[in-house]
Amino acid sequence: METLNEIYHEIVEEKKVLIDQSFRDSVATIDKKGKRNFLFPKKPKGKLYNLRTIASLIYLAIFFTLPFIKSGGQPIFLFNVLERKFILFGQIFWPQDFFIFAIGFLASVVFVIVFTVVFGRVFCGWACPQTVFMEMVFRKIEFWLDGDAQKQKQLKAMPWNAYKIRKRGVKMAVFYAISFLIANFFLSYIIGMEEVEKMITEGISSHYRTFLSLIGFSTVFFFVYYWFREQACIVVCPYGRLQGVLLDKKSMVVAYDFVRGEPRGKLKKAVIDTNQGDCIDCFACVRVCPTGIDIRNGTQLECVNCTACIDACDAIMDGINKPRGLIRIDSEENIEHARKNKFNWRLGAYSSILVLLVAFLAYLLLSRKDVDATVLRTPGQIFQTQPDGRISNLFNIKLANKTRKNIPMTLKLENVKGEISIIGNNLTVPAESYFQSPFFVKIEKGQIEKRKTKLLIGVYEGDKKIETAETTFIGPAD
Ligand code: SF4
Ligand code: SF4
Image 1 (tube, rainbow, N blue to C red):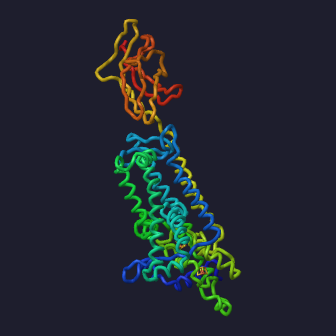
Image 2: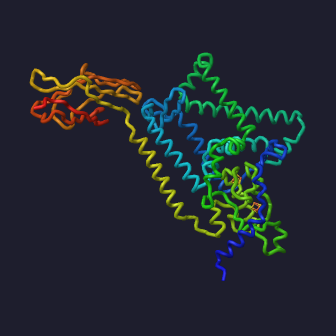
Image 3: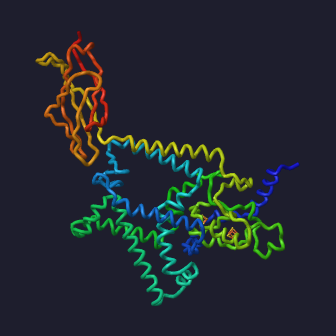
């Protein structure tokens, strides 16, 4: 006797045959002659779209506020690739922090891979700046200026007359103005808000490079959001191109429940044919898709997991009194086996790895020191006997101050009694600079039992110990 699972597999195999796979040979935005198919997605509506709007508002508020927030007179985020100055969460990273960047970068790559394997492309639809600005800023403005999809199509088909010129002109001006605004903030993450403000207050002539960068970025953003649009995700984005190798049948993605939905057919036919699935072939899910695909064909490279099709299909299911979730976030394997429970061991294990990676990245950032200290005994010197009978060694300390303030430092012997005398009596490390100074360590002869004594020197900023440097103290052999 066949088990329930076997029966399901038969249904699945039978239904898979029905699904034409030829859609994978082309992308929805390129026609047979190789020309761009411009898309006019319908305005999405629904619970997830509202949630996405709220998430985007928070996202945009953070994006436009962060450049103004300072800690100790410096921005808390700066990615100045030109001068190799990086600030993350208020901490300045120097070239000698490169290893943190390298390890952090590797950990981030692993994070992205593991996250994608488990949760699919949820980042693309909900947190990628390209999608957030395209769908939640420019697309909304487009709906407001030009109306919904049908009106936009009519406007495109219209011959060039005064009305169309005015409409297009207004849209271009508004899109460029917003691109210019975004470019200002984008640039402030690279060179700092102060530099952008200087250009505004002191004039373009003395800051023409900043101005040219601003115009360059504005033009690129305008081009991307006015014309290029979803092509950025489909053709350019390397993360999007990786999906084919990262996703598998267990990944949680926006998916169509083909077991429940097939064979699809019009609503009228469903009344006669009781074997018909729940999909009434209304194309509501396709009409809202910003990348122009039909998610009923299965997971596709173009799907950015924006969830607009879920809202559209749920509204249809409500209208025909069927349960919601014909399109939902689920794994292909769960759908095939009609499993309700979305939690599996892999989800748990991979999520734990993600938490560990985030903790590791946070540790790397938090454990980073403001001052790096290296203590070395001065080469060519052994020991000296002081007039008071103490034995002294000459050392050299090299300090790198990664902050934007001068830091006075002190040195203390941690494991032996003795005295440290800094030559010049000053150990203040200037902001964002290297500093070095020779110093003597003087120890009572009675404390030295062998030729080489391990020495621990504490490097302090006020009462806070920055580092303990380990070196050796050379004494008389007897
Ligand atoms: S298929 Fe659905 S989730 Fe994917 S891009 Fe289209 S509307 Fe968004
Ligand atoms: S919106 Fe739902 S019912 Fe309509 S075509 Fe898409 S999957 Fe089928």
